[in-house]
Amino acid sequence: MNSSDLKASLWSQFGASIDMFTSALRACPGDLWQRSLWEDDRPDLAQFWYLGYHALFWLDLYLSGAVEGFAPPPPFTLDELDPTGILPDPPCSQEQLLAYAGYCREKCCTTLAALTEESAARRCRFPWGEISFAELCLYNLRHIQEHAAQMNLFLGQNGVQAGDWVAKAT
Image 1 (cartoon, one colour):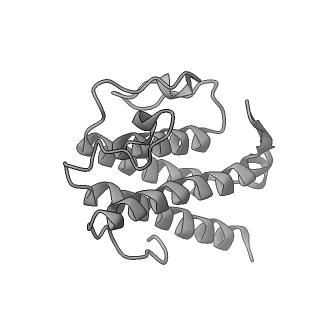
Image 2: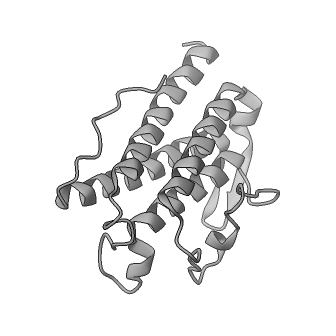
């Protein structure tokens, strides 16, 4: 497989995960937007909108490959990096998160299209460990898909059909 085919395949699946995630965001009715997906020590961190925000923030950050120099688009801040769990106040709206999802989708497509052997091998350091940018992309894909699945399960348990399986992005 040549480099172009590999990048196209990676985008096809990464983009599909983002599309499924976006479909869940779009499908969430207002009465579920601030409901918690599960109860634990911090149910506020499990609210539907926050789970969406969390997934998009880390998608954006990991596509950058480093905390240094990273800044999410306004109105979002770096508060998500605070280990105490500061939530945006007021909660993010559906429109804000859909716009952020579109921004991240475009960033992902552009980042993967520009991927070279050198940029794929670049070492990325985070408090949880160090990996190559190529592996970080796969880690990132799994993270966005995990939250898409959680959100879709929650919607289904509340009688909301989110969207169909997306086989690949275009």
